[in-house]
Amino acid sequence: MEECIFCKIASGEIPSSKVYEDEHWFAFKDISPCAPVHILVIPKKHIRDIFELTPEKEGMMSDFFSTVRHIAMQEGLQEKGFRLVVNTGAAAGQTVFHFHAHIIGGRELGWPPFSE
Image 1 (cartoon, rainbow, N blue to C red):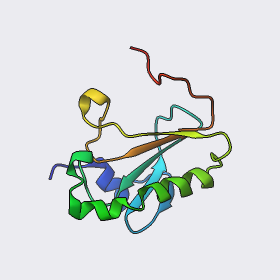
Image 2: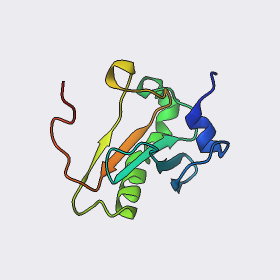
Image 3: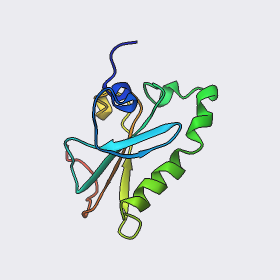
């Protein structure tokens, strides 16, 4: 497997601003936030993207939304809301090929999210 920056962050090899960790998930503040709250949630086990979520790996995904909910509440986002973003593939904006979700909030977010 190629060198993966998110694997190194999850293992503690590269420092991060950790906000959450459990058996399967690691969450940390984005180094280039687009909002007052911008947190990345990554699986500790390397999964390239949503297409690698095979049936044997889907079990760990069962608690993904509970993890996101916990982090959102921890960050005080439950009242005003937040955006949850998963980019899959380079054309969609995925730049690190380790499955991850962005929790973005703390300000008014427009729609559509990006201009063409």
